[in-house]
Length: 282
Length: 252
Image 1 (cartoon, chains in turn red, cyan):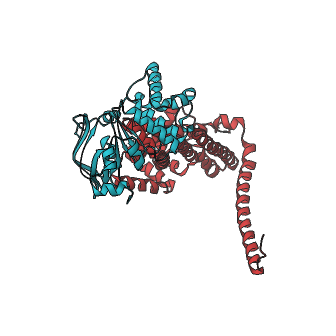
Image 2 (cartoon, rainbow over the protein chains, first blue to last red; image 1 turned 60 degrees about the vertical axis):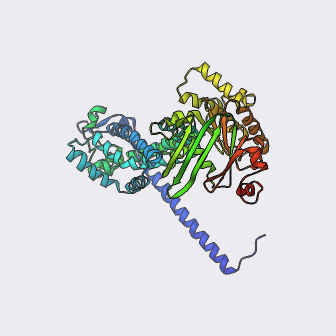
Image 3 (tube, each protein chain N blue to C red; image 1 turned 135 degrees about the vertical axis):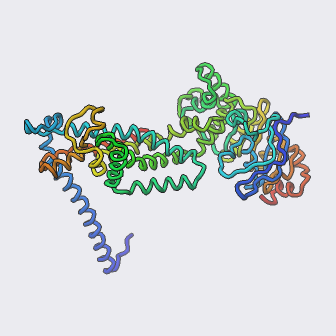
């Protein structure tokens, strides 16, 4: 049974509730507006020709196939490098490192690195990979920059999932005479794989959405290359291309079409992360 | 005269500053059940875990003195720890089956030690499950997950898993403390059976259990071995006042 509240508290309660409702409503409206606006302007412009050709100044056509390819290439390059590196580092830090202070320091550094604006990775990537190591702007330099950028994330998510594997499994395996690596491979990793995979999918999401770190390192090229050629030839990914079309060529409608494609991709990636995570967990 | 399988001399163990085992001297006989009793924190589990070097996993552990298993120095510099742990198996306090099928749990050890043949594995799995008195309960669902078993069944599965690598000694670290009385009595019966083929060293909080099934009892207090002898003797006529106080329930 509800006691009747005094008038002042009733007003206060109702007022606060209205305020919170307003906050929630505003956020929803904003989201719906952004998504709706992008789809409304972008979707009509998505055609098969746009998706399957490259831009040609001679013919006056616009196509974003090179950027789709670049995006796929850069995902491949970064993931192939970052996955073994990050998972390896995480296994070392959680399972092997005996110097807890050093491990703690590395973990703290990794944590800090995740919060750095990505343009700084772009700057450092340009200095190190282009100027110091003499790479040409392209998928390799861009991919390496992204590796540095998402490495901390992969290490953190892998560590978190390794830590969820009960200590008793490790003891059980070691107690049967399993060597340490054998124990990790047969008991720890199979039970951590769902978290690792989810982390990877989210990393792919960050790669797809990244532009600032790639401006200086992967370049603005709009020509379709094979995978091998793209490594050291300037290639704009979808997000960079969006910047390009919106800012330098004034093709706002193309930019919105790319934006719509990116949103759909992000949605698919997030759904996949959830799905894979749950499937592997079962 | 019984054969000594394990002997400790002046064994000391430190967790950093904490002196957890003090000058332990003990001779443990073959094919018997030796119970380690004492209040919480007395060092009995620590001692058990020095035997198969599970303490190695804890950072900051320092050990001196000697611990010999069949004349072989367990802490010798070149000791093959994985082989030692194969010969000295362990069953833990809480059942800890791996989240795999019952079959794969039992086959884990043999596979780890290089047995690949399906026929050989099938044989070992059945033999071990029979040895742990759980075969009849699980033979129709070997491919099902071990996580679906009851606590008592899981613990017997863990015993089967330990038996599958053909150990010589079985260490049981309060292996019945997380179980109900019926499961506990099954595991006690099992231990009594197993001592024909294995040497069993068990840590227990349960005095009746020690009195019921062990041949020898060792009483630990604050890191020291206070008294060690035949179980019957110890529970009827303890030599040391502290032992008497403990087993009569005056502290602990």
